[in-house]
Length: 101
Image 1 (cartoon, helix red, strand yellow):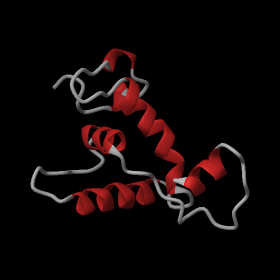
Image 2: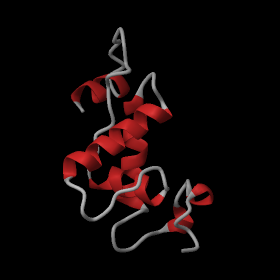
Image 3: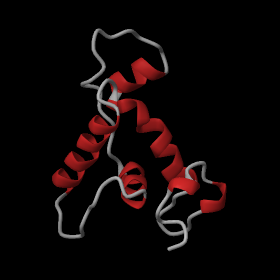
Image 4: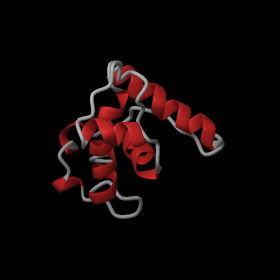
């Protein structure tokens, strides 16, 4: 997370960004699951969930997987909440398979 913040916020130059991963917190996992990007079942342990999030972010943007971290976190924090979603205000609602469910 620290390297990600240094790269994104402070524009610190790195020779390689492919190892700067997304930080898979509850918001990021929830948004990626609801968007259909990952499949997490209730019986999975947290390490398996974390790996799915990281590998999907690497697949989506191999050159800098962590670049999606803040956007996905912000969606989860502000609109795609655990109990009360605000899909109408969400910037990705048109692409979200959860809308209409």
